[in-house]
Amino acid sequence: MVWGVAKTPENYSTAVIGRNDPCPCGSGKKYKKCCLEADASAKAIKASPDHLSQWSRDADEALKNEWTDGKVACLETAEIVTRLEELGIDGCETTFVELTGGRTSAMSIFGDWVGELTTPPEEGDEDFMRLAACELWKRYCPENPSVEMIDEWVTEGDELFSANKQGEAADIWLRVWEHVRLKFEPWMTTYGDADPLVGISQY
Image 1 (tube, rainbow, N blue to C red):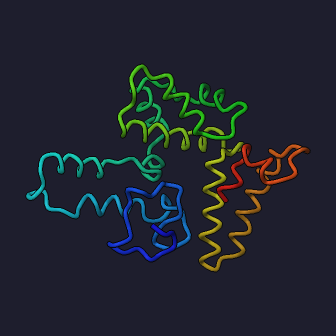
Image 2: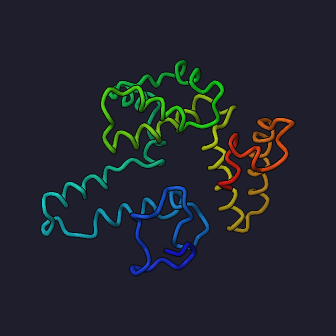
Image 3: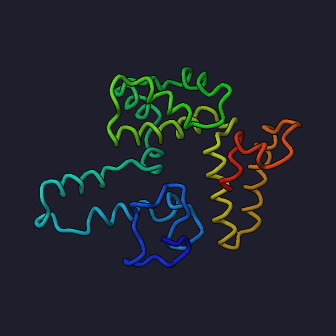
């Protein structure tokens, strides 16, 4: 597949697209911020249940129940914590905030959670844990944004800029800079030096 080529049935396959890859529709947005949910919905309804095998019906139901950023964001904090507790994970604020110490990414907390499990998580549970780590960081530590939060701000700025709202985009990018610059050390004089800290290369 060639990125930026218009999405058609012939050249478009969600099986090879990562959540953070450029969306193949050509919008310039990340796949997760553009066509991911629409593609999942299309897969779920493209065939009539009357003509599906039991395996296909199960797959169809799994797609409908797939966790997304938006679905987790709609949950109350207590609901997220309860679901994590059911998986054997402590998602309370005190414990989570302690885990953020010295970290820049919610994915590192997710990695710790997975390592604490006595059995490998099922695919849906793993997706929920990953998204929950990102969402709880937003709620518990808004003053210390994670790399994932900064990534969302950059994407939001890109979308506003593309919509000819340059002033609003600049305000968001300024917010990004105000947080990112605090993480720099004097010896960081190149993008390569700072990349492990704030993930500049993805921008």
